[in-house]
Image (cartoon, rainbow, N blue to C red; front, side):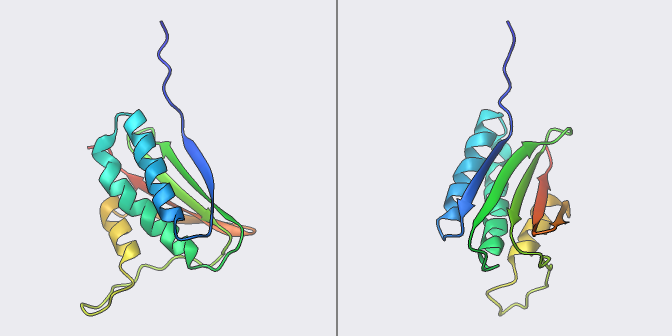
Length: 131
């Protein structure tokens, strides 16, 4: 008997506040299918931050959110939006309430995140390692 391994998941989300919740549910569900619930909490934070950044771009169409397995047994979270503006990791001051999202992504991924520019937008990816 052949075992079927669930594949990657991709969805298009409108630029609305509820997109972050939908993205978290997608990622948590997929990680559960893959038996990688150990990465779910960190993955939810990462996808929430990436989707929140995409929401701030002012784009009006759809963003793409995807989760893939990596060859090393971890997961890659991808968020593609319609803006060519690159994300910037900023050291937030102690009294600042913003500029902490990418710092969280950077910490949770062990600096394993980046951006790919496209003719009309970009994809930000973040890798979570297997424990």
